[in-house]
Image (cartoon, rainbow, N blue to C red; front, side, top):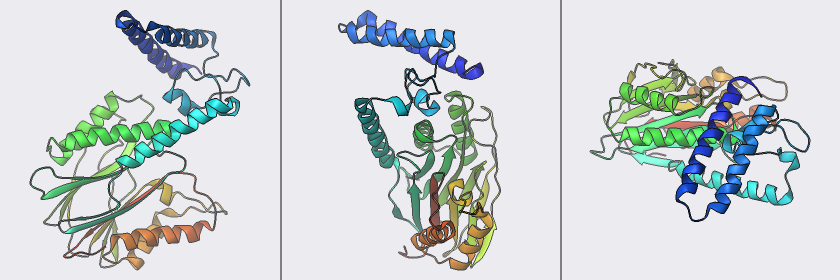
Amino acid sequence: MGGLTDVFFREQLLERRDRLHSAMAVSRQAGSLVTLLNEVDSALERLDEGTYGLCETCHESVEKTRLLADPLVRYCLDHLTPDQRRVLQDDLDLASQIQRGLLPQEDLALDGWQVAYHYRTLGPVSGDYCDVIKSAEDGKDWFFILGDASGKGVAASMLMAHLHAIFRALVASRLPMRQLVERASRVFCESTVSPYFATLVCGRARTSGEVELCNAGHCRPLVIQEGQVTRLEATGLPLGLFCEGQYSVETLRLRPGDTLLLYTDGLTEARNITDEEYGEERLSNLAGERHAPRPRALVDACLDDLSTFLSGTPLKDDLTLMAICRTDGPLM
């Protein structure tokens, strides 16, 4: 593997070895811990020999996302035994179930607002992050977050869950929006391996129609007002790139019927059979033409248009859409 990757896995393995030694000192069932310790020592030996991360059957590279999830992995997916494949599938099914449990209710009616979203994973789990957090105090504001962790598969889904925990904890502290995102970025940076980052849009909506928005390097949100579409630029870098990143906040005031549309690049970077990109321009035009003050209808229209564009070509990335509509009544 080489370079920083070797350093990262060595640190992970050494940390696990230290924890195993500590556990063995107080455990009455040291047998299984000894077996794990031997596996860790064996992995460290493979690092020294330069064979770490290579399948012991075909000698090709083991999938990196699997190594990140379990640094003791010794075989690639093609050379797992039937029992190992069954255990892996059970783990993925459980991870998918847990991740689905982290998602908000699909169609939400808040005081003066309606929210609808669509969350589609490329595989069993996703690196896309989608959440709606209601105020625990006076109920006059609530938060929405949509983002995309770097990478794919299990490793990206772990980052998604990490972001979910960070923002849920920080929102409860009632920090101003700028400080909320800056602190989230610092926590994410300090607790995540350096090659990984996340883009996201974090917003606070109030019953008055005011929205505070912070865009950390994510796709440009669309504001749709009477068929006119405005694209909002990023106000800071992706989370995790720098521990002391700074962000600015944009304040909007939405009137009844106005909609905010958020999305991940799995939508705009989707390509059809001729390798044409769906693109932000097509999405913006559709949002202006097909807009109605019903967020679910807008989300469905976007998905229908994407399906027409792809004409059966499979997606190559996770995809998430969220429409937030300012209402003066119970619309969906």
